[in-house]
Amino acid sequence: MEQFKDCQALVPLLRQPGISIERKLAEFQEQAKTYPPAHRELNAIRFYLHFALWDCQDLWRSRHRGITNFATLLREIERWRFEKNERVCFVTFNYDTMLEEAMSQVLHLQAQDVNSYVWSNYSLFKLHGSINWGLEVDGIKHPGNNVPYPYQNLIDAVTPGSPHLTKRYRLCNREMWPMTERVVVFPALSIPVENKDEFSCPPTHVEALEKMLPTVTKMITIGWRATEAEFLNRLLASRSVQVAGIRRSVELLVVTGSKEGAEQTVKNLAAYGVNQDIFSDPNRARVTDGFTGLINNLESLETFLRTGLY
Image 1: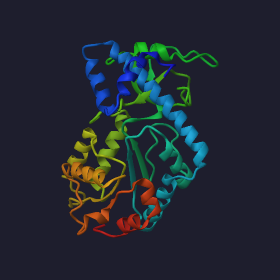
Image 2: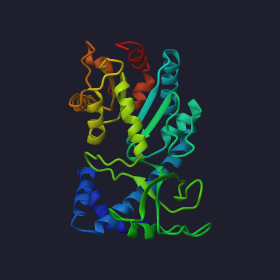
Image 3: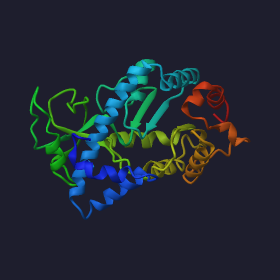
Image 4: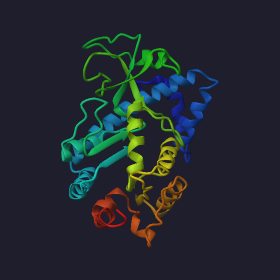
């Protein structure tokens, strides 16, 4: 936080006991409509998120050494996919790259650039951006090797409608340096606000996802409350599309940390055309002791993948 002074005045407001950080950030976004300096504050938060999450992920990697729930989940899904000759689509609203690292580890799949997140049997969509993505910025020259990156210049210059910020996405490293040519980039992250619906990904990703959604027959949610309106509206639209003359139902497995969380996810998804009515016992399709609970009891995943309508 010391690096990004523009967000420091907001920190005490985000640390108040009992508040929803997402709701508070939504208030700051609303304030920016009449208080332009709030744009700098929100820009600083984007940079903070980039560095804080990158460093947390590095520290966690030094502990888990590749032994993660992600890796085990991918192995089980790949075993099912291989047997059934299916395709798999991952959608995440998180910014970290733990899923990509597990995909490289278990499936030997790796994105070479931001346009290569769709493979023959797997696809990955990061709708709210990623810590290793940046948006190219025009009009600000890259300082070159061994010169401090102009973070503050970007925080000051980039505002809504700014001619500097482009829609060209680049893979970048922790220091916000693109992997190929030396251009200046801005963190490609959506501010995590309540009921957020701002996508921070290439339009081609959204188009590819929209084509895949009508073909989905099984859905697993992990730690997701199903509150992202923009994605849910696209999911609802996909439910009315027929594939090969058939409008398919979606079988749902909900993984959360509590029964209340599972009920909320099921309720939210039901409003958008996804439900668990195909199961005589709804509890069969709910895991309420979290991601680790699913991995510790793979029978639920096994049953879900290999039984049901599809």
